[in-house]
Image (cartoon, rainbow, N blue to C red; front, side, top):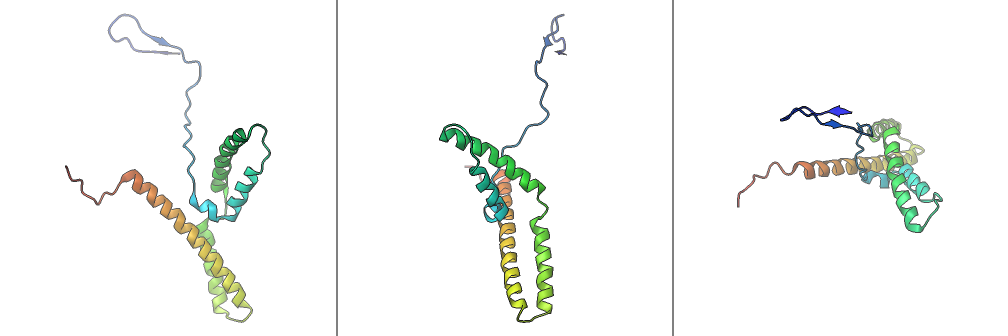
Length: 148
């Protein structure tokens, strides 16, 4: 219950609110392009789409689409293997392998380089998506506005 101030007359409005105000406004889910290159995220997507849900096909699609962003957002927040940390770890492993060059280390070097390339691609995709989001939100500040 709240009381609005008296503005012009000697009567004050009383407002009854039946539900408490919500302090949390969830942001809409945004697609992260790096999910398509991350094997764990792809497995999560496959698992969610294979969940048996009751109802019509359209109802199942809608429910899968409601579940998907929540699970992927939680995975993104809780994952311990962040891309920059993994990149540094693989780079240090690669330096160790290159210091001790031998025929047995060639396969290890090749697999480390392949994994490093994949991680660098994911990081590039992440930052490309972020820069595009900022550019769309803020515009091109280097371009002067010309009145027509």
